[in-house]
Length: 193
Image (tube, rainbow, N blue to C red):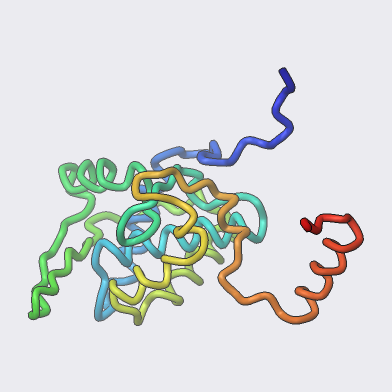
């Protein structure tokens, strides 16, 4: 039997504060999005996901370090619902139901406490604030659609989404890169006949 040489995929990164990082981030993002035209549960999830995965892609360290799962509307923190419910029960957040008509109902998270952002360093904050700016003017549907890239498509609903999926690109391969890949395939003899 041969030992596995493949590295394990990263589902959780133990960062100081653990789940409390998610709680504080929910408070921070909700506070920053108070005046956003649209800010339902989908956008809250997408803002946190983008901050985590963009951070991992650039520096191999996420912002929350918590596990993600593939869901119908995009990647979601595995613990998001229980954390969110606990925060509602504790009075840290409230959920306001907004009816936009045509069957569009938004469940807006309202911060009722000031976040403790001491768990996050300036690099973390750069990714968090960039993610808020990125999604600020998008609807939940637009935010959801955008999160359905190649990383999401490699999974089935309920599957874990390791942080390494952040390294996959949705951008088409340019001609120079394609030629380098073709040359590498030829040089290595990776051609099937």
